[in-house]
Image (cartoon, rainbow, N blue to C red; front, side, top):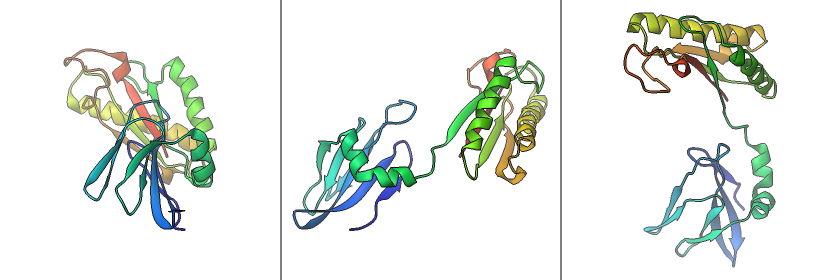
Length: 199
């Protein structure tokens, strides 16, 4: 029996070699996304395609053509439980918001930052990306500097709480990637943010 393979992308796929009717086969199972977003994958074999487009949709790949079926959560746990338990924790995403024109977190975001610290404490070797953003008020030069300052402020807070500096990367995107699209000059509070990705 070959070992289980894990793949990541828009969906988490599980493939496991198994002995079925005397021939080697593989199963591919589409698991639900943690955030509930829909996802899909196409499995191709011998020029035939099977579309897996809902949670627990599965395909059995044998020497003949692939065939689709619906797996159950119990089957996935029974067959892939050890592989699922051994995989690294999925990335966590957090958004912190800032007072206009500053690198000061809003009161709600100060509380959210505690959630980030709690998530980091669960990970043996966290890898953190901190991306600063601004709203569309002001010119590119000022917004680039403010976005980077916001990212650096959050990075410093993470380091102060014990995360090694080499494990935290901070960058600024200015007003280039607005969360809420607005015309230039609009002060949208949801655009004044830092996005944190913890892997």
